[in-house]
Length: 462
Image 1 (cartoon, rainbow, N blue to C red):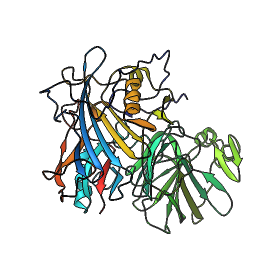
Image 2 (image 1 turned 60 degrees about the vertical axis):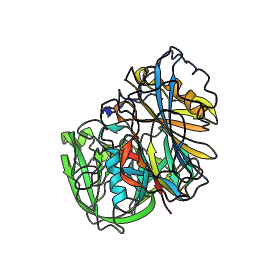
Image 3 (image 1 turned 120 degrees about the horizontal axis):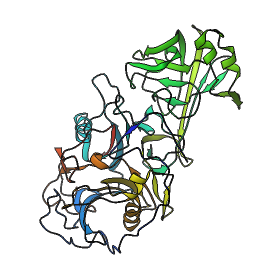
Image 4 (image 1 turned 30 degrees about the vertical axis):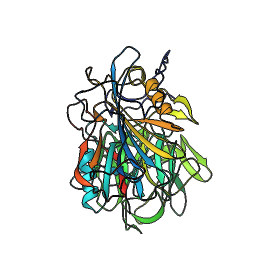
């Protein structure tokens, strides 16, 4: 996989893609009974206890702070949040940052959790999510993003994500997203939802909602098709069909508004049309396009839609053969597959081989595990390479694991609990209360929590 986007991702270090040459792997020293061993250190500057004793946050939810050493004796500070899959009273949900008008923006993960709690949810923990794009699109997730069944942006075709189905089943894999726009005459596959024009996704028209920004713009001319009179309100659902009517065609634009409650379809204008030698864009409709099961794809797949024309948009999202995905947050790369270390993809040398603060997620038959490793703080924790992180996830019992955004973005916070709540198996039996604000238990390398585009929250549903 070699992805060369012409935009930049804003993350903890550098963009996670790139050619990885001659990557050497190093094994973690043995970590027997990882969650049971006692800390090697005392009195460190981290905010957790570091004893290795699990703190029960709710029935089926436990937090553990581990302190370990690298083979060279450098410190590691590791934070582990475990959620039992057997306990149906706790669920994992994706939340996203939002600006004043609902557009995707950076927001502190604890603030996202606070908003969720204000809506009536009993939030007991939050962990940061995916990478986001660089300015001026901070807060727009790099990968697929679905929250409460609403899809706000698509991701790269080969990048993984973690999802949770409507039945609560956790999944890690490469999601399949199909968005098809259909008129009475033809159908077109949408290349991306709410991603900047000119980026290296699949070719074809891009689709926008107001959750992107108030306008879409580029330094090259494009054609914008405004679709209104929608049969159902926005945001778009991850598994739904809606109908609309073409209300306006904007030709030769370099910036176009995205009206609230409407869709905007954007197509790059062929060179002939931009120069005026082919005003109708006929060559663009014929060249560089292909037919795939009746669906037109390719760089020249211009829609030639007309004002007043009725259209239908079909959205389908699946992962590992499962549909009805309720929550999805992306990441990169895969660390563990089928219980074996398997760093899938071509992460950059910096991302793979240098030690950074890390965040990772994983599943096995019994649990969902979210991990934050502190880093860039020599007296507290030096961080991990991807290889070391993959070994840690194996030691924690992960069947499948994925890296997410790290560096200064890595954060974990948990709610206060009643005294005597016990461990994860019996917490909540004594009526533990969930008190906000959440307490940040790791030591963010920026010195404070960083705004992110999305995050995972653990919610007590009953």
